Image 1 (tube, helix red, strand yellow):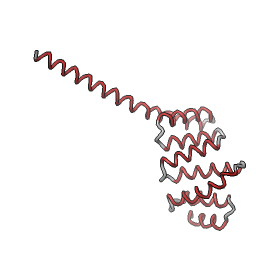
Image 2 (spheres, helix red, strand yellow; image 1 turned 90 degrees about the vertical axis):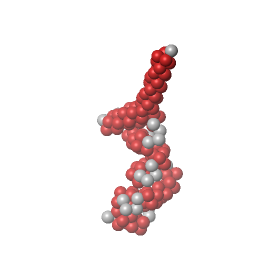
Image 3 (tube, one colour; image 1 turned 180 degrees about the vertical axis):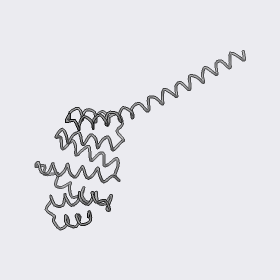
Image 4 (spheres, one colour; image 1 turned 90 degrees about the horizontal axis):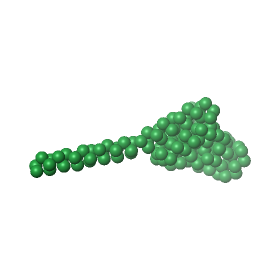
Length: 169
């Protein structure tokens, strides 16, 4: 009777460990797949396959939607596919996930400048806020100041552009 009880406990312990192993395997599978997808998106984007890059980046953001890097990669894929409004949304989402990363706002500002150049009237209104925020996030970053200078120059605000260029230098 004692042997049978120990055997039953041993069986339940094995089932418990097997269940824990399966849970661990499935919870790491999604982030692993997302990581592979975003890497593939970058590779195919650089080879000029923009639609495949968008598909892979979308797969990454669906598998692991909480990583700013994946949304940034999606924005870059959209840029390669000439989908500027989608790129702007992806960069904006990436920036909301990593509000401390001025690089993300820099890419958003560049996209908004392209949208403004293509006739999007609402892009102009968003640009000034983006330019101010990028420098607010990282005031000592030359790239952040250069982003602000580029925006202010495009908006025709030459004195502020010159101040930002001097800060960048």
